Amino acid sequence: MKTRNTIIFAIVIVLVAFFAYTSICGLSIGNFTIDPISEDLELGLDLKGGVYVVLEAQTDITGTELDRKMKEAKLIIEERVNGLGVSEPNITIESGNRIRVELAGLKDPQEAIDLIGKTALLQFVDAEGKVLLTGQNVKEAEAILYENKPAVSLKFDSEGAKIFKEETKRLSEALAKDPKYDTSISIVLDGKTQSMPYVSETISSGESVISGNFTTEKAANLATVIRAGALPVELKEMEVSAIGPTLGLESFDKSVKAALIGIILIFIFMIAVYRLPGIIASIALSIYILIVLSFMIAIHAKLTLPGIAGLILSIGMAVDANVVIFERIKEEIKMGKTTRVAVKSGFKRALTSIIDANVTTMISGLVLFYFGTGMIKGFAVTLIIGLVVSVLTAVVITRALLNLVISMGIGKSHKLFGVKEVKNEN
Image 1 (cartoon, rainbow, N blue to C red):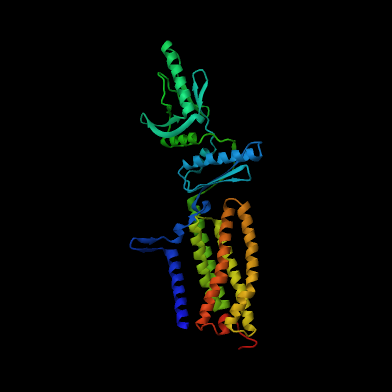
Image 2 (image 1 turned 90 degrees about the horizontal axis):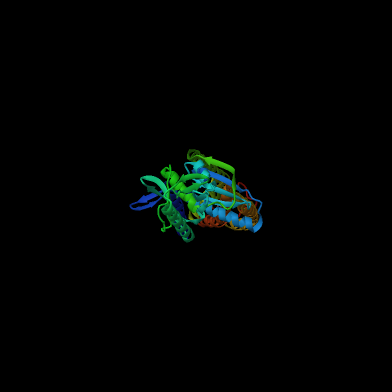
């Protein structure tokens, strides 16, 4: 039995060391590659760099009507942001009348802010000032090269195509009767004429081109804005913050170093005070960290600076649970119980206190997640995940490993549990 348990314990140690090494350094065997965990973790805005902007609706409407317009505005902003090519933007409605837009990794924050908030009123106006069509009649908009210059091609919906055909037919017939008749149709964007083509024949294709002094990038942005349409409510820019990628990575490196130093100090403290249980707790904490980070990768949770703080706090909760358990075990040993009985009794007596402490912290985490926004939610997510896993590792894994070591015959001496004197030593 001792040999079998020794082999099991050795396998556990080897597996933990293997996964810890692979998580830090990665692994490559032939065509099989495992990236370091730091490369698979999705970083939040404050670590990856980027921009966030908070927009507030400038309207008196409330209730379900406001909810409907805010949801429409959110969808339109998502469409516009997708045109920027930003990977996994985070766009959320806050407090009922605000929209938070987080764009990680964006190189030009001001460009994004201009594009997000733009109203983009597109009109087709004849020479008499009559509005023939608006951007609402546009079905498709795409950046193209027109006469070797960047432009935007438009395709109208069925109603727009019908109106455009009727109007171009009217203008071409007027031109046939009077060669001096002004058949121009101005394409006006936000009050500014972009191009002014002349109609010479009926256009039944339902398509048009906006040409002007565009760069390729401006033509692409204009196409994106037209596709998305106008915002249903006016949105005012309330808060803007841009974080450079260098600053974000510097913060990430410092946070990781701080976390590593903290974890190493915890290991040293646990081993110095609790001896054998401290070693077991350090192994369990390593398993805890691997599980938490792997779970965050699996659910695509973004790691933020507050998230790292939440992770470190949950490590503290896990250590706190170990401290409570080990102190109970020491009390049991001092009363003269064998280490095997003391471990069983210690875990049983400490379980209620551990569950109470984690439940109260869990409630705080859930409240932060429900009412919090942005990075506060990131903190709450890592805290909640960490608490669940910490109970698993502190209560289940630590106990299993401790019993395994005792069954190997190693933990019979009370001194290995940090106990100097026993009242009634068996």
